[in-house]
Length: 343
Image (cartoon, rainbow, N blue to C red; front, side, top):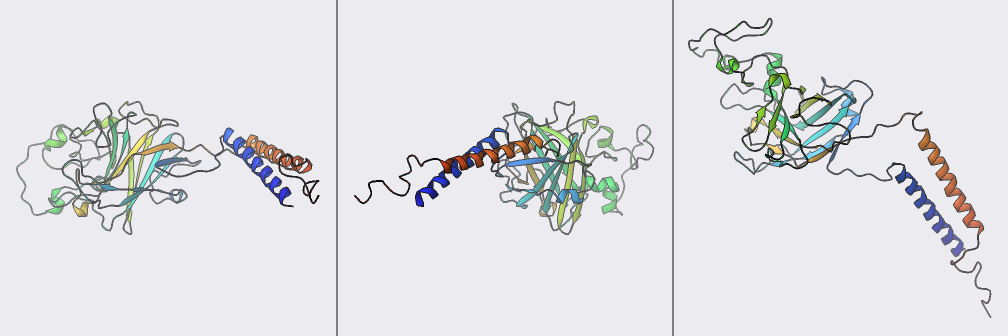
């Protein structure tokens, strides 16, 4: 009985090995593990690019990304003020949307006072295969998507220093140049920063996310206004920020990250907590993660080859087991004991 049981167990192991080999050959993973990869899941319906709390996001489990302090260049933050950020990514094969979520007990969306700093989050994407995670380098540039809570607030209602200090004296101002566009709010007088195109000074912002590039410390540069490709949406609720950043997959600008299946793009994240004085280099940062597009799940009509393969595999395994039980146990001992046993 023991020899027969051992024989069947070995045949079952061979059958399992055959099944695993066939699954591997046709691309069906037998096991999977989550490491430092952020998977971009495909969705059939519209992307929830304008609603960070849409139910579609909660149907996708987040990737928990640990953050550490920034201790490479001044101003430093030795210990992170935000320990983790949860990341989800979706695509409809035309556009990509990334949801970033983190705990923050206060909503800080103003920088109009000298002692106030805004909450913010950024995702940096490497433009090459080899670059430094610390703001890039000459041989490997970065594309950075930087969301700012004060920019999001300005989209709802433009604010200026007078909103924080309503009784402040006003200096004499020069008349503005040109004619403002219809419907665009215009502060009184000549705004030097806005006139020269400083993105920090513009009155009407196209997005709460700034599209930038960097090739090392001190090189952070916004892309021109007509090439700001990234859109943003955000909401703070019950001590949690949720921020969506989205962009078309195919963009003509070589300074934008290549996002497509098989591109092998790597990404990293940074979070600023304005209430704790985070700004500039004082931020909580992650290591590199691989950005990988998941293979879309086949529909019922597309999955029939796999179903046929599974059926054939099970039939083959059954045949191996049946034939094995009908054959003499070569090399497994004498059935019922040796013929000369007891002589």
